[in-house]
Each structure stands twice: as C-alpha cells, then as structure tokens.
Length: 251
Image (cartoon, rainbow, N blue to C red; front, side):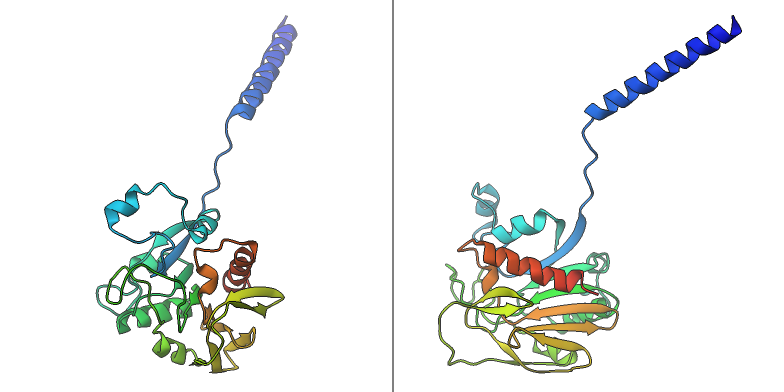
C-alpha cells in the first residue's frame, strides 16, 4: 500500500511538472534589456526641428538614424558632459560606456575636459565632426534649432594628436570614400592633415581617425553626410554600422 501511494505521488508529480512546462511555453519571453548609448547632436536625428509642441505632435516616421540606433540601444540624450564643478564627467555621461557625438554645437571648455576624461577612463566614442555641413535646413543663422554648420572641436582633437585639414576647392558633389572595404557617403568633407601615429590610425584617405586614448577609443569622421535624413539607403546604413563596429567593438 505504501509503495502504491509513493508511485501515485510520483505520477502526479510528473503530471504537474509537464503541465508547468507546457504553460511556461505559452508565456512571452522576457525581453533582453538594451544597452544604453549616449547621443549628443545638433542634427535633427531625435527631433525633426521646430517648436517642441509641434515635434511632440508629429506622426511622421522618425529619422532613420534614430530608428537604426533604437533597434540596438536605449538612447540617452545629453546636452552637457561636465559636472557642476566643471572638472569631471557628469553622472549621466559617467554611467555610459558608449557615446555618439554627431555635429555638436560649440562645447564649452569644461565639457571638452569632461569628454576627454571620460574617453581616457575607458569610454568608447563615435564622433562626426563635419567642417562644412551640407544638409539643408529651414532655420536661419542664429536660430538655436539650426544644425551646427561647422564642427568646432579643434582643441580636443589637438589634445588627441590630430590636426584637421580642409580643401575649400573640392567639388560640391556627393561621393564616397572606402574605409575598411566599406564605402562611406561623403559631401564636402575634411581630411586629417596629421596624426600622432602612436595613438591614431588614419583610414579612408585620411577621412577617419581611429585613436586609442588612454583606456578608451575615439573614432572621428570629418564629415556627417551619411547621417542626412535623405536619401535613406543601404549604403548609409552599412557605413554607420561599420563605424560603430570600429568604435565600440574593435579591440
């Protein structure tokens, strides 16, 4: 009799285990938590431009770069890098390991110091610094909503051993530069005139600098044409993916 009860208990236990497994199969999978990615830009990547109320009310498709990034990351928008004392990265930046800085507005010295400190402490930076932005805008000079026409990051780049160059006589036509077997769309772009060879490698006809800065890495592109809203094409998508691979994942 005792054995019969034990056997019966074993049968019921097996049934319960099978039932639990069956119902678990119907439960939706727990979504993978996305890694955070910092973003600072004057380009209409996150907001399309215009008054805040208009931007919040928009029903159109988001900028392709925003959609591309949000498929992989939780975006953290930043408008400054320095802490209140102006000496160290603020808590928002310090909590990140990866950052996209795309044609930022002019940064004060404290922000440049904080960004340099963050990279040297192990941060991974993808920086677009266009010397002559070609994307059209509806906002006139002096309007805070207007994208930055010329990147002004020379003090930081010099600290990293880089000197920028720009040929004003170049053709005003979109073209492409090959970086690690991937064509990068460009339009009136810059080239690095020189670099500290111990820290930086120049790629793609000196369009791109790949620099090891302290414990971190900074990949700088002297053009932002590939981030333009139009046209949306696979070449720009692949180019951005390749640059992110170099900046964030290359050892």
